[in-house]
Image (cartoon, rainbow, N blue to C red; front, side):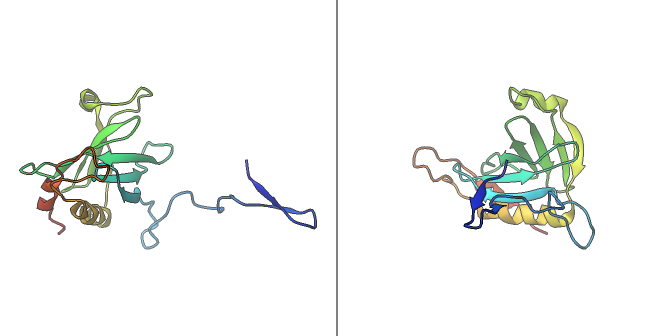
Length: 157
């Protein structure tokens, strides 16, 4: 449903229409659909990513769990409202549980299967954004802090 703005001549034009064509951005050189659409720092001080992997009808926002000091950040744990999975930063392999309306948790990782693979450019971009969130007391809500200093060990190249 579009919201219309009235003109004096009686004509209406939509204010919030989506542009026609592609729903998700494409890499113009290869013509492939980008899998990581957006990244942002969340209230926990870690990274949230908006992704659309193979087998997903539409994009979902995933939170990346904090990596504590001393842990190896090669295998990132990600979770959305309906799925849980892992991203391997060395190979780009994405394993994901099937969607569950009640939410997916750590126990559902045993049902996770390989659904997609990120290319090198997307892995490098994700690593770059991860390093920017490295902090021993990450978070900005003043109540809860997380130790996300383990992502300092990520090697971009």
